[in-house]
Length: 294
Image 1: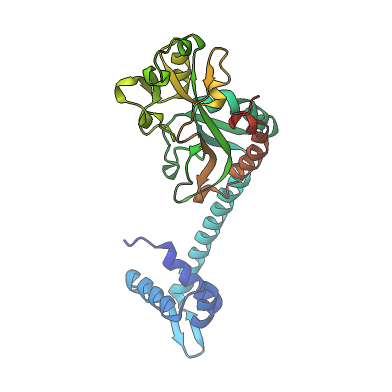
Image 2: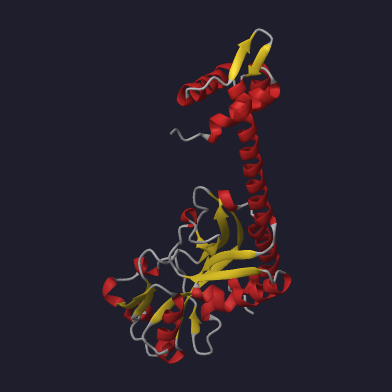
């Protein structure tokens, strides 16, 4: 028994409907030899003559007519399935998977996600909080909102705004630093290598680093408990009731906040409506994210 290849069957259907090879090539948008090769392959594979090849055109054999009836039923089922899939995707309902960081979720996005839910209650948000980049290509997430220096290949997206960074510490810890250059005597709290788009650890000696984490919020808590100085996004450091920002210049003091999706997902209705909503909603947070205050 031979499995019927739907791609080859489509060529058979088109030639049967059009009545000639030349008309079928125009309809399919391919060349003459491609259609002829696919027809010959279909007949050879199934040991079946589908058409009488006449000077006036292609005419179905008796066996070909029987095949056509079954093929039309298959085509109808496939088209119905395609419409259902497309129609379902165009509905503003179902799961939308979002990945971002814990700090962005808690301090920036939570109120916007609540407002989005009020507008689109049938879209179920599935939130993954991680500092690592989830593989959207493997469908770990539909949309990512996170700091990045550039848009990854095969992704489409929009640059939402800038995120400013600064050095923060508890006032009593800062005042207790000794020496002509007090920052050189400080202990440091930094992000683990590869988890932050900006790395202050490259500017200080390794022996001065007392803690590394994969999230900014533990860095803030450690700095509040006088473990050392932390290099933080300003929207995190400024929300602390304890930490003080130090006026010191760093090589990198800002990065871009991106909202992105894989190219294959950009026409999804859920993704498009979320992009439109979030681009507008997050404008109210631009100053906070840029370190210009609340």
